[in-house]
Length: 246
Image (tube, rainbow, N blue to C red; front, side, top):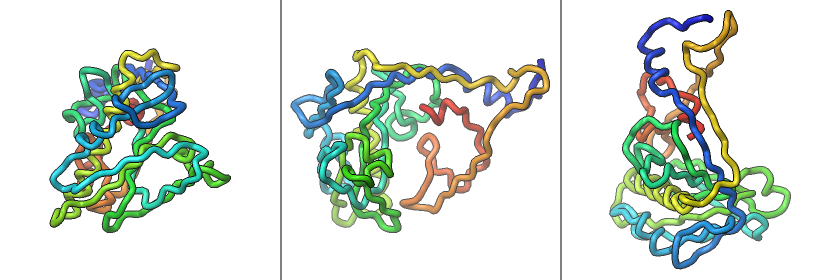
């Protein structure tokens, strides 16, 4: 068996290894109700709870609506979107934003497949997008096929735009985690089990496969984050594939 050299990078990767179990809950309908819950594929969200999760000094208000596949709707000024995920009662979803910045990619993660939290509105320098929910153009985006909780917002008077951007990001991730928390205790429709071979594994001369990925960070409103930290000016970082999948 071919052995990888004993280096700090090798030891770092080995320290991250584990098995990730994604518990897939398929969302077939969505709306508002008295409580945030998932029953028989129907996801219900509490407006007061959503408003509390989005509350921030940089935001004057936040508004919510559901848009589902087939609706005669076009979502404009789309800024960001996230699939609801939860690590269960012990927390850990969206590390660095919703939970402490601890290494993930292991254990169990509840995933609401077929749902998304979508932020829409104005931010300086933002590269806006649109989503069609019906007609031929709906198939051009995966978000045209999901039940989307749209988050619109009004900045607080005098709040710096950078603070508005950060508040919106934190708020929508808190909302996404709370929606997925509703799946705790609900039997999943499917389980995806993922693991990454260790750097010392492999047979004979067979090559190991990795990827060198360039990330473009353009400052405020167009940044890339890793465990809550901007990657602008960051040295190269070794990332386990399960961390990305989580």
